[in-house]
Image (cartoon, rainbow over all chains, first blue to last red; front, side):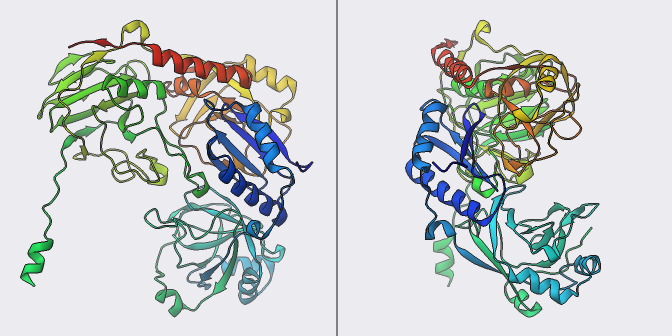
Length: 234
Length: 326
């Protein structure tokens, strides 16, 4: 087992695997790979997994196996965790209509970091992001890392309503709001692709470990893809 | 054209079961819970008091994991549309059928047109209303459990509302049984929560841990299916936060105000507050029967001990007999 990998107790039927102290794309790839392996080889013992930035929670069936046996199995399985093509995750392109009418915080960010809006939009598209975690709300994918030049702290007062599809930045993370919800991230555009639909297979276009690139589209393309404008930003 | 319309006309499906006359404070469809959807950000849901839930199903001769109604605080009134068998377990809410007082922890026959009412609780918070065969609710991601925050489960992702129809089949021949009083779980306003020290425990000094394990806490005013906020001795750790990580049932979060939050069935799947350990599920069930001002103490136990307790509890449940009332 890689020396930096630690398996610790979380709760009566859960262990947590820590892959690293910090988050980076290599750690994300490792976690993605470990998730695939555990789902493949240990499905009998495992109830569910929560992959996150630098860790993975493993919930197991305590009637079938105890935590000591499970720790041993995990250690065996994760020895020499190899990062290969599978662990790179899929590359998903998400279209974004970047404009002041869809991204009301663009002027604020421009002022804060002293860069023109066009450049913020360009920088946001340059990066290839990793899906580090999914949580907060169904389908909410935390993407990292945002270029330092456009990293922007959360709003001091969160909005009561952020519209579905809002593309937003908080510090060095970015995300697409899967549904209308409260939120304190800085909105820079709207994405017409649904991030979560319980009636669709797959439910989400991305999973933890995948890579995401954003691509600017025009207002017409946004409408053609089913995008909707006119939501209020309270 | 006319022919085609005729041939595709489908007789509207009338589903019978129970009509919600009054939904009460918060009444939710629950089954065993939603597992295997953490990677989409979906939490478990499921009955807060699993033991009472399993008993409700056993008293109706059901599989243990079928859909029931979890009634919080009380106030539910239903009208039966079918002849069947019901049972209510859990918090002590007065139960009446057509105005006649009935017992909890036993099954009863009801007929189409009967009015079943649950008053407000005397002790405990949540009760479980089961029907023979279970309610027929279409599962979402493998479960009927309602998680209101996610808008998922139940009839339409919300708590029950007036005139909802909860479909079920007629099972008038199900056996009538009861659980003897000596075998019924007892509810009170004080619990000791057994906790497995884990997660960021080492970021709490031995002094802070001593304080935590020797103090009595009160359930604060915000307590729900997501989490129970406690009030009492402030606890501090040497970190402000951590990289967000997976949270298991019962995890005890200590935010910066030092007041513990115990995370329950509808918790967010990931979070970044330091955690001192996790309460075992036998005890989150008891905590979930406490309301504001309920008293809580903690006791540390090992992972091995926790497993023993849970396996023993399972075997006691399986060995406890119900008594026939036919």
